[in-house]
Amino acid sequence: MMLFKSILLSCCLFAVKPGPRFRVLALAESSGHHIAYSGAAKMWLDQLAADSNFVIDYIHNTANIDSAYLSKYRLFIQLDYPPYGWKDKAARAFEQYINEGRGGWIGFHHATLLGEFDGYGLWDWFYRFMGRSGSGITLLRLHRARCGWKCRSIHYSKTSVKPST
Image 1 (cartoon, rainbow, N blue to C red):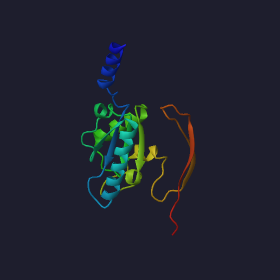
Image 2 (image 1 turned 135 degrees about the vertical axis):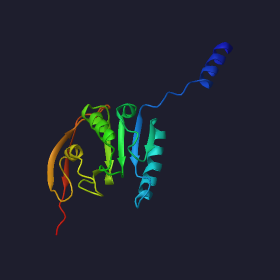
Image 3 (image 1 turned 90 degrees about the vertical axis):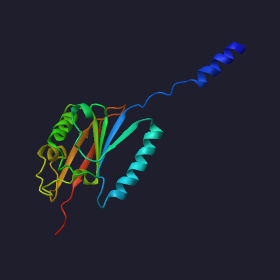
Image 4 (image 1 turned 30 degrees about the horizontal axis):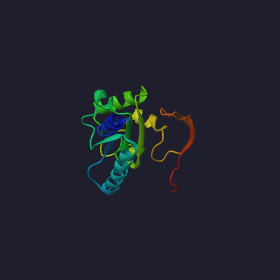
């Protein structure tokens, strides 16, 4: 009996903690007037990752994004980072990542800032990805989305209201 207790105690003391369930990549601007928002979001996301056993990595530009880089991640969070100005290689890799269903995407704030800004043209694929909604466009559609992790299909209504003049 004493031997059994010793073995059980040894197993508990040297138990290997399971690795993270998945990896998340978050893209956020590193400067600008929304930096406080990104900082608060990072603190919240870090706590969520710790509580839910996943790893989140942060980047501040798209320079290193390619298909191999994205293959490590099951979720891409675009946190206050506009869709214009991405490197071409990164844009093509992201399109492939989404089109092939290799991971999910969540965007916040400037993630959906569509149009021609700062000398950059409209990213046509991203414009379609956002349901062809953009500045000044009124849109009401019923979309159907599928979750990959133990959940059923989700139906939601997406609206974008044109500002009144």
